Length: 170
Image 1: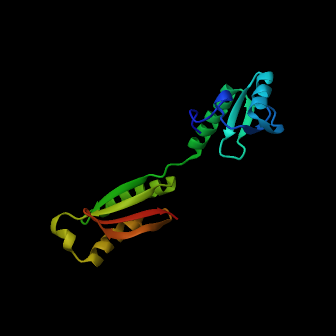
Image 2: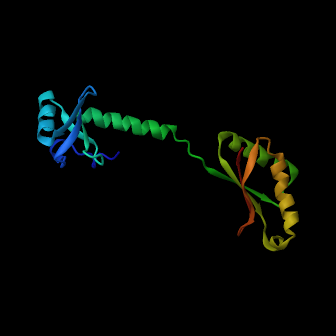
Image 3: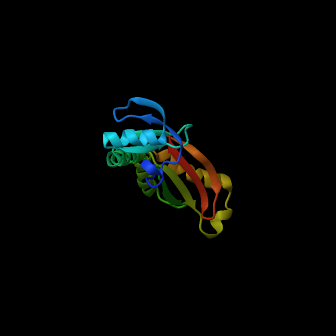
């Protein structure tokens, strides 16, 4: 919730508002003047918390505390959000077995962390025109070495670099 959009006290333009008291009690629908008077008598602000309701909902509260609580809620939701990255592994046709094992180990670790993995079979020069079945078999070499359970999110497709597939945790 952006604070430049929150209307406080005399910024509220609606003729009537549904008022919620400082302890959560419902004062019902009041004219804006009587709602402002109640907030003033309590030494607090009238904050419009739901401007799209009919009539708008306003709460009698301290605006500073309200902003603090909203910031805290926003930070908590950001902390809970887990960003899934797409990690990239690049393999060539002639990549040795040991190197494939190392790359598969890294891919397994990334899958365990919950990331998606884009595996590129890099095809330099004329190797782009090799038999597609042979190229897919080369791509499957690394997929068989991955220890974590996975599913193929995108089937192998031709890309400018060669052959590309995307896998994610099953």
